[in-house]
Image (tube, rainbow over all chains, first blue to last red; front, side):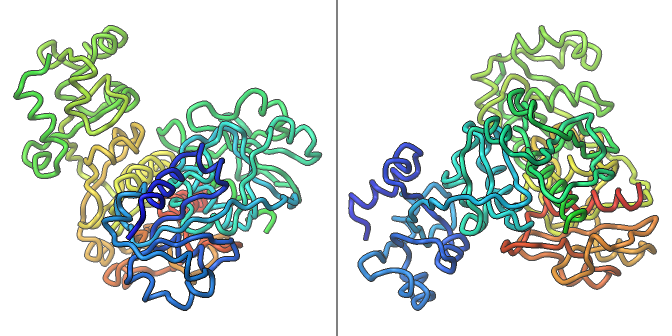
Length: 247
Length: 247
C-alpha cells in the first residue's frame, strides 16, 4: 500500500523540475528495474508487487534496506507510473555525478529532443562501447522516464553529460565528424583513431553554432526515395562504421 | 465541415477490420499527405484545413476531383485522427495491389509487431532502395496509421506483402541471411549478389519455422553491455553493410 506522500513523490519524479530538485529519477518496468538492481548504479527505493519482490528477493535485499522496499499492487503502481503497461516494479535512483573522462571516441548529440530517440541512442552507445554521451542543452532530459525506458537498462552503463556543445567542441583538439546531407560517403570515410561524432536533431540537423566546429562532414549514402533517416537509425549506422574502421 | 458519415468512415479506417473491408487506409499529417499527393500512389479523398488546401491547391487539384476535396477545421480533423498533433490534413488512399517481382535482394520481417518499428523499417527499405518488404502474418498491419506515419512518406514507394514466410523462403533458391546472436560477424560477411535478409521480432527473434530456412546466421558485433538492439536499428545497420558489400 502506497502512502499519499509516496504517491506524490513518485508522480513528482515524472517532471524534470522535481527530478532536479530531488536529484532522483524513476526506473520503471521489469527489465529496467532488474538491470538497475544488477548494476553498480545506486538505488534508493523500490516499489513493487509481492510477486516481483518474491521472485527477486535475494537480489533486492542485497541492494536495499528493508525500509526502502515497498509492496504495492499493480493498480497502485499504474496510478503513479508514466507507463501504460508493465507496472510491476518502480525504482527510485539517485542521479549519477560521475566525472566524465574523455575516451578516444565520443558521441555528442545536438538538440535530440525526442525522448525515445535519445534512449535508443544511449542503448546504441552502450552496444558499441561508448561510456558516455555528451548532450547539448536543448536535448531531451536523459532522466525523463521515457528516455530511461527506451535505454532498456543501458542507462546504468552510459553516463550522459550536458555541455555547452560549441564550447566543448572548440577545445576538443581531435577530428569532429558530423552527419550532414552532401558530405563524404560514410563507406569511404577513414575514421581516425580518436574523434567525436556529432548527431543533430531530426528536424533541424546540426545547429550552425555546432556546425562551425565539424571538421569532417559525412553522409549515409541513400539508394532510394527516402529523404532522411531517423536520427537513432543514422547513429547506429555511423557507429557501426566507426567500429568497423577502428575496432 | 465533416458530415456524420464522413466522420464515421474516417474513424473506421483507424481499425484493421474496416480497412480490410473498404480496401482503403488513412494518411495523416502534413508530410505524409504531401508525399502521397506527390507520389504515383492513388488517392481517393482529402480532408484538410483551408490553409492547407490554399497552399497546395495546384497539387491537390491535379490529383483529386473537386467532390473528393473536403474542407474541415483542425478541431474536426483532430476528432477523427489517430494522431495527437499535426492534423491539418487527412487523406484516404486505396490499398495498392502491385504484384511483387522479386529483386536480387529482398527484406523479410518475421513477427515485427510494433507499428513504429515496422514504419521505420519501411523508411529504411526505401532509403536503401528495397522496393518491397515481405511480412509474416503476425507482423503489424502495414496500413495501420502509426505505421504509415512512421514511414515518413516511404509507404508511397515501398510495397509490403504478407506471405507465408516459411513457405516463401523454402522456395526462394538464394542465400537467406538472418540476424541472430552468435552468428557470423557482420563486418566479415561477404554478402552474395542476391539474397534475402530476415529480421525477427524484438522480443522473440526469428521464429523456429523461419529459422530452419536461414542459410547464413549473422550478428552485429557488440562492444559494450547492451544485450540487444532495437529491430529497426539492427535492420539499418545490416542493410548498410549489405549495400557496402553489394552496392
